[in-house]
Length: 75
Image (cartoon, rainbow, N blue to C red):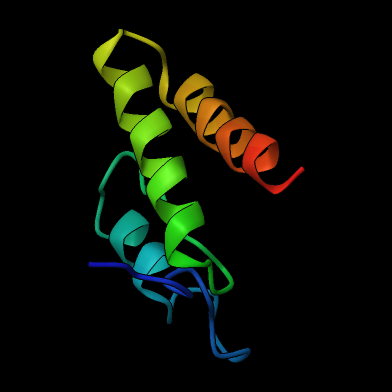
């Protein structure tokens, strides 16, 4: 299940989106999208992200791997 726009806020409060609310509740790390993402790109990102985490990379490194997977597909 996707959660596009899960980091969007309504303009009145920075904590109205799902991702900001999770952070406010104490979740140490949240991965969210501010805009819609095509399913095939989300799949590429997720595969690279979770493989990177399983290989012992940090969350930042795993996010970079996911972004690079999408970049290489789109070019």
